Image (cartoon, rainbow, N blue to C red; front, side):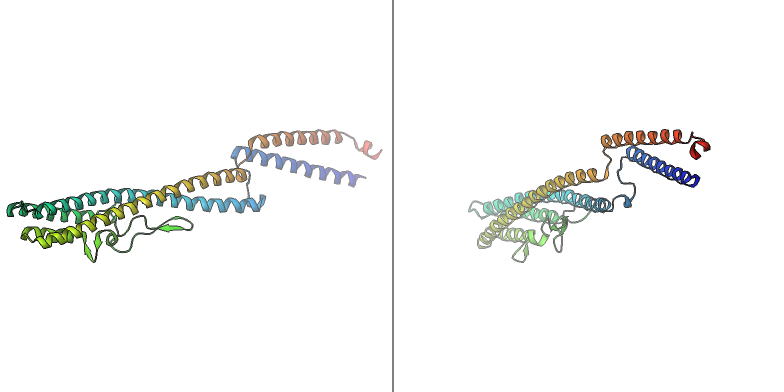
Length: 276
């Protein structure tokens, strides 16, 4: 009988210790705000949290790339606008120089301005971004990653934008300047055709860059929406629901108090009570 009573008391003490442990665990969940304290608490949930965390880290990097690319696109768009304006000005000057009213002095002045425009266009071609890198890559266009399966070059290479028919656009302007200075009507006529094509190419490339900017905006919006969804899912899986946890804490506390009260009442019995 005494052994049976001892065993019963041991089991009861162990049960109360479990109640205390559960109560302390709930208190930690409330104070720390985290539902999972160890991976073993819920391996499936823990793995999901780790997966979400990895995705969120990647999305942070992709968002940074989008911001960098958007700044690059904005800068490239400004460069293309300036280049288009220069090309248009070069064509206007060449038209003026080809007029029968233009005299040698006029053509010399126009030729000088055309050469200046060519130099400005070369400077635009070599424009660099905030990191000191060429806005328009000198080799292959700079490809960036914006999602797990989305990579593209937001800005074309310099060769793709400022080269036409194997020659730079500035070379076409210098050829026009040479023809103007020499009073070469045939050369000026040929240059007008080249400049018209160059203006069209510049406009096309600016539109292409604009499309890249719009695409980046859509990707940014998509990442933002996914980010909100992942944050909410992670919160549901990982964070403590305070209302539920507090109710559970109160219930656990009441259960433990009841167990302690019953245990204390039972242990007030004497050995004779038990033997009797």
